[in-house]
Image (tube, rainbow over all chains, first blue to last red; front, side):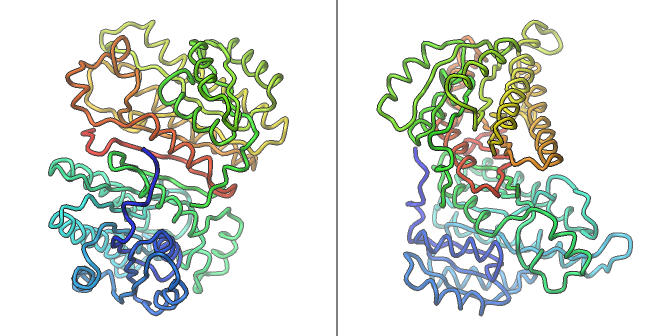
Length: 251
Length: 253
């Protein structure tokens, strides 16, 4: 009973939000391990660029353009993957946004976008992946990229509905696990909850206010590859082991 | 997966409850990886047997007898270990008990034993390890072997204060993290919380689950938990794994 990525070699993984940050790091790590990875993002060009650089790796990186707040786009992604790459074995629900606004004065449409992507988009993608896994009797693995803010509301200004959306992800993780149990499915679900990571949602965000920039630069921070390594650990566990929660903080 | 286990090679880890189960499985992996381990337990003969089995491996295993419910024993064990084998870099608080009694009608002596080992012993061992790490400016790592039952209370008769003791461990991990953070100290604290594991804890003379029931339950192997701890230990200095909740796939609770 050893940690191994062997059973995923040559299999299809879908990574949402694969254009940068954690998603890019995970997609690239899985390609290194020999998987066929479909990176999904609005900026699919970024994924295509990296695919060229990864052309000598064991696996392969494909790119597809999609807006994960739109159900039709998500359905198209899964259809394309099924028809062109094969049945999905791994789904990494990484795409997510923080809308820096607040509850007392914020715009409804900003709040709605956060839920549409972080909660609904994640749930639709999950449903589509599970459908394919069931059809093909695949004991697959779904990873929700959650946040420490999905477990506790830390005192950071301007997060508005983001913690609520991530608390939802925490609940969705357990709800899904229970559904798999009820249905006798051996598909695994893992929630990976990072603290602050250097991404375009945080320190690399071009539209960060000067105050927020100063605030963030003082804090210890993780790199996308640290989260990718955690996800690879979870994926490497034997079939009888379910990593339910992996909380990763910067020291 | 890039591994930073190299930083622990030749260094000393203390593993409590190293005589069997998760403690023994983890001790094997550490010694195999070149880490020296001082295994602390009451059943020191079992650690000595394991030490013979592991001779020839990169690391060494030393057996130390101590009752982890007694502060004097723990303090003395740490002094003995660090004087003899060097300062501690890794502490794995693995020793824990899960006896079966009631809460509404239970034996308070058993409740006290559970709290003495699972909570108090863990706190004392942690304090002693941190003292050594601070003295020697060691960027060490402390691992609490917690439980899924430190995060939720499953519907299982006879648990008495065990969930409370493990909820305490969950809180203690975070309290400790905040203390280190406040002092800007680079010591890591990880909580590993397994669901059911195939060790002696659940069986005859311990929690005493009916064997026919136990055989139907999906269970983890001690090695699975050992792998989780090794992953946490192998992360780069900037990465702290705060929590790993690890279930047997298909476990109901």
